[in-house]
Image (cartoon, rainbow, N blue to C red; front, side, top):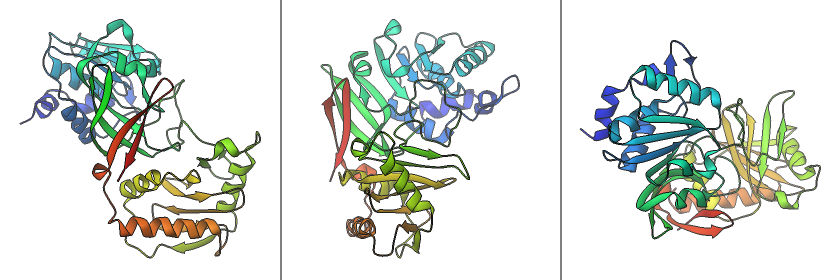
Amino acid sequence: MSAVALAAETVSERYYTHHEGRGATPHRSNPAVIHRELTTLDVESGMNVVEFGTGSGYSGALLAELVGPTGQVTSLDIDTYLTRWAGLIHHQRGVDHVRCHAADGTGGFPERAPYDRMVAWCTPPLLPGAWVDQVVDGGLIVAPLPIAAVPNMTVVAKIRVTGGKPTVEEVFTGGYIEATSSPKTDLDLPGRWVDWENRVPAPSWISIAWRSEDDHLHTGARTALERLLKDAHTEPYAGAEIDLPSWRTFAATLGDHRLTMAGLSPDLWAIGHTTTTTAAVIQQDGTILADAPDSPSLTVLRDWLKQWEDAGRPAPATYTPALVRTGDGWDLRLSR
């Protein structure tokens, strides 16, 4: 049995996610995914570990088991409500080598650095330089990172820091809520790169990678969203059921700045192509929507889908990752 599996036998997930004092918290990840990420993190006894995204406190409790009484865990979250409750629940269990702090984790936490391991349960806009600077030589970071400048297009990366330089050793399917500068209450709306949002008559939103070409009134984003919502042409996708992790990764790696992500109805992400005059997307349920049957954006989208099918619907793990230095951090880019 793995070290993470043994730790999970000691820590009750429900005690944290449905604590009788706090009640259920929606700020939690699938426990199986938490176990996968922590296994990838390769935590050893006595290590100094930091996590970004406290959530219910369950992941911090597992980390405390993994580092043992001689190690220490720092847990950061922008939401003071979460950090205060997680800190109390840890204390009630007699776990005193975890410290929860309300802070913007994208700046790291230099007070308790350097860290042997870092893990993120939220998605920063890029790999922050502060994270790399605060990891020991040979240390590991496991974090979700964007692969395009639209929401929900992420992979989880295993990153080794050597000589102050980060290198991606592995990527796999996954992603978490976007890191934001203030607590997030609407967990259905992306926290970053939303270019227009409707709240009436029903929630909907759109993200356009060409936002730098839009005007100050977001006319392009507003119009593209309206075209997809009002009297849109619809048709079913002729292929098999959409494999969303594969399709969104492929779409991101095309590098087309007209890439678009939208949420036209609850729980259905849509990916496609838009311009100032045309729009076309395919939802994860296989429904294609466009401004017209002969839409130029629809032609582009069909070509993208054909390329994806011809490539054999590649899995995210089959791409070659590279970190590109930009500003205060590194952008993750995938290629085939």
